[in-house]
Amino acid sequence: MHDLDHDETRDAPHQHGIVAAERLKGKLPEHCIHAIRAHDNRTGLKAESKLDKALIASDSLANLVEKTDKTANELDVTTFRAELEKVSLKKPWFKNNIWQCEEFGVRLDDFLRLGLNCMKEKKV
Image (cartoon, rainbow, N blue to C red; front, side):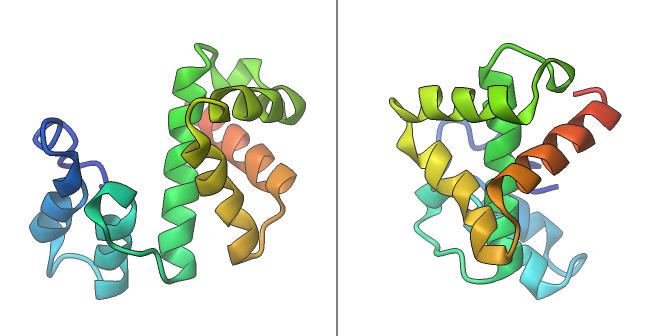
């Protein structure tokens, strides 16, 4: 739901999440709406809650899997950590976003394992 506006805001990335949040207002609790608004740093909104940070970290993890040109089934935690380091050389925000998992109480390796396992189940 947080990327509901992805195609619509492609040319206005500072609006990504804002448009989706407006569409979902009244259909989700306000803390969920805030997480959607704040999940992309280009909006200028700051992540505040654990939910905000979890959405940012999870979204970045899924985006990073896409950038590896591998499926979640082909990745393990060690390989994924190496991919994270490689991509972060050019795009350091990936690493910063994913490491937010520690701020909501989940160790990095556990977060990567959980994310990869979820994507395997969903066939992503």
